[in-house]
Amino acid sequence: MAADGGEFHGPSIDEFFPEILFQVAGIPVHRIHLVQFLSVIAIVLVLWLGTRRMRVVPGRFQSLVEMGLGFVRNGIAHDLLGRKDGDRFLPILATIFFMVLFMNITGIIPFLNIAGTSIAAVPLLLAVVSYVTFIYAGIRRHGFRFFKNALMPQGVPGFALPIVAVIELVSTFILRPVTLMLRLLMNMVVGHMLLVLCFAATQFFFFTAGGGWAALGVGTLAFGGAFTLFEILVAVLQAYVFTVLTAVYIQLAVAEEH
Image (cartoon, rainbow, N blue to C red):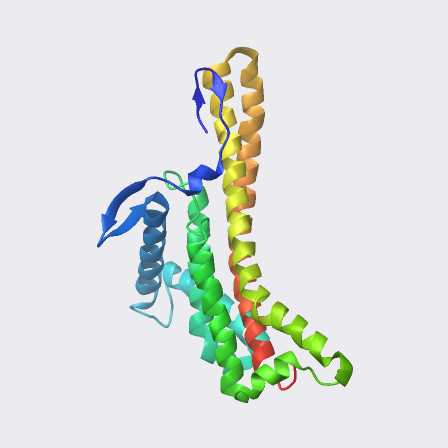
């Protein structure tokens, strides 16, 4: 993404396969792993510091943490699952929301500049957690009839049941976790590529091309600032969407009919 020898080199997919920095117990660790570690540490610190000394009249920091937890609890869990099931699954939903949010937001933090969710491991892990929770909720509520209810909806004519069962199998039990993972992953990858393209072009126009080309650098810098604000919105929105979809899947699993 740098300008070498007077030529501009845009961002490439190689940025998501960075060189190994060191190994821990034989496990390779690279830059994006460090970003993920920092995100997890930040989540733990924020939630711990915000809840360790709860006061009846909360301070600003406690209020901020309570606002975030209250948003997940009231705006997602209770709204979609009701109070009883919402409280039951709140720990998982809150974990998913804050994990996605904190790992997404690192994409616009200086010196980090890449989202922890921009490689497949984290979105895949979260999709598996969502999927397993969906299956668990269905079996807990309906027993193994859950699979029959999901694959053979009521009211479908007998001759169409095999076709419907195959469609439901693919859409519900195969594509669902895949689409969850890809939606989050692709949004973060594309967002990073756009930001790098804008700011790398700005650097090229200002410091390499020079002259009248600097005017274009002002434009790419403005676009970079706009895309940064947009990326913040996407980071929050993707955390919300992933959590809402997980809650919706749980709601479908515990519903009386499918």
